[in-house]
Amino acid sequence: MTTSPATDAAASLIADLIGHGVRDLVLSPGSRSQALALAAVHAANQGHLRVHVRIDERVAGFTALGLSRETGVPAVVLCTSGTAAANLLPAAMEAFHSGVPLLLLTADRPPELRGVGANQATRQPGMFGLWVREQIDAPVPGDGDWSGIAPHAVAVAMGADAAHGLPGVAGPVHLNLPSREPLSGEIPTVDITPGEAPKPTPAEPFVIGRGPRTVVIAGADAGADAEEIAHAGSWPLIAEIVSGARFGRQIVHGYRALLSDDELGGRIERVVVLGHPTLSREVTRVLSRTDVEVIAVRRGGEELNLNGRTTPAASVSVASGPADREWLGAWLTASAAQVVDLSERAPDPDGLASTDPAERRDAVKAELAAVRRPLDRSFLADAVWRATWPHDRLVFGSSRLVRVADTVLGGKKVPVHANRGLAGIDGTIATATGIALASQAGGAPGITRVLLGDLAFLHDVGALLLPPDEDEPRLQVIVGNDGGGTIFDGLEVGATADRADLDRAFYTPHTVRLEQLALAYGWEYQRVTTRTALDQVLTTPAGGRQLIEVPLAR
Ligand SMILES: Cc1ncc(C[n+]2csc(CCOP(=O)(O)OP(=O)(O)O)c2C)c(N)n1
Ligand SMILES: [Mg+2]
Image (cartoon, rainbow, N blue to C red; front, top):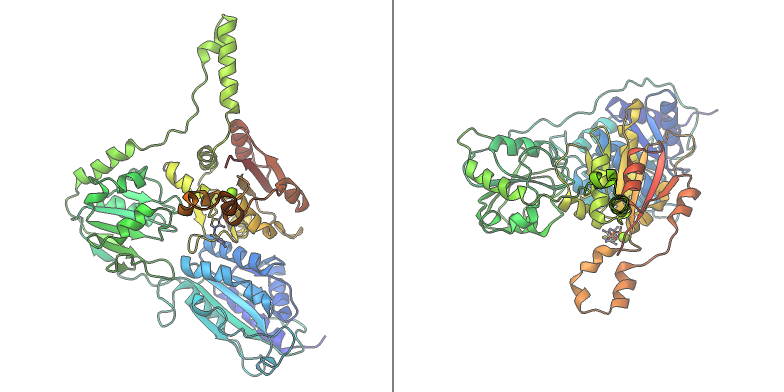
């Protein structure tokens, strides 16, 4: 077998990426990317890398995003030239806006074959535009070499390169990698020594006093820091369900109502916001108030500055001083009254044990009615929340259910993920698959549950396709099926526009039989219509990939 400069460069680049912390690579098949793909598989065979193969590049991109989300280090997604590369854009945009490290590797033709009508050749350098922290159009192996690319790319993706990108903020980086024929050859022996990704140097925290009447708002991906700050300041904590901070004694239940209350929301003087809040108008409203001091801890691509005078901060720490117990107390008292009680009414044990047959019959009837009570969105969200524990992962799609969950669920310290950078309904299953694979790597316990609507499910149905010879993730995909996009039923135009037109253009009804899809892709399938059955299927997972369909009224 002959040697090829493309393969030599590819083998070194893959070794270099592993040396700088990369552990996962998702690849889609193609000819121009063959040297890189084979070098990656070679490294995987030696146990240095986990390779995941997906035929659809959009699925591959979101799978890599999920892997990166969970591990905190950039996963690589690798594809061939042409439209293949364009399919990575949605994941790149989401990674940019949610501050997730990601490396996009696109194979390309050499410069002399660009812009001259060569097959599968397009304008790849710079194609991810504003949604990457940096793009590198590498030289053709032989004309130049690829050494130095990996450490630089990983550091920028991690937000650990002070001179490039945004220090402290992770994001995607694009490496466009051209090659000439022969496109691959014998893989050279290169030393692979797995190393660590560089971490950003922690910036000086912005120190704030306990003084003004403050609330902490935790948006998507805020993480446990938000709870710590609320605790340190003795401030109420408004934590979206996708924040990873909905736990502790200071969380505020029913925050939407309380933010609209003059005595509580109306008296806020200062907000410390972490992560990216997206789930309620009430939070947007308070962050837009010019009379409120807002301090925003940045996580993703764009600065949060809804009131035009928000102070950005890399992190926040709280100076000691007297706590405003009255302020926190007022919020927590009001919060206690907002707790949503989703518990089942206890069956009548006296009736069941009664010697009077009529009394006993009534008690049995009441119990059966409770068991058969139809499922609604609140119960569905609550059942998933109850079944999920710290070693599990919970992923929310951008359907109505995430808002219901945000409204009704209480505090619990479980790892939650959601693509709220741009809140797309694309890529949810692929993202969750990446999260599952990363969180279960090395035999770690737990299961990943995904809660989403039917359209979000159908949008990413291609992600059900997984190679038979790869590690099977433990996944429960739970679809609340209301026959279309009911999130649009609340649109303002609903009051005036024609119902049939609205249905056609927004609700977009479908009659897809999810069971057939599940079976075609080799997933376990369960259709669940009662509360008892739902609890049972969630708490006794089948072990591999499971699709759970829950019919919901529109
Ligand atoms: C990629 C993308 N396309 C379109 C939208 C707009 N959108 C938001 S929710 C939604 C429908 C969701 O339907 P479903 O998942 O069934 O949830 P439901 O509203 O019925 O709960 C659409 C199309 C989006 N967010 N992302
Ligand atoms: Mg729906």
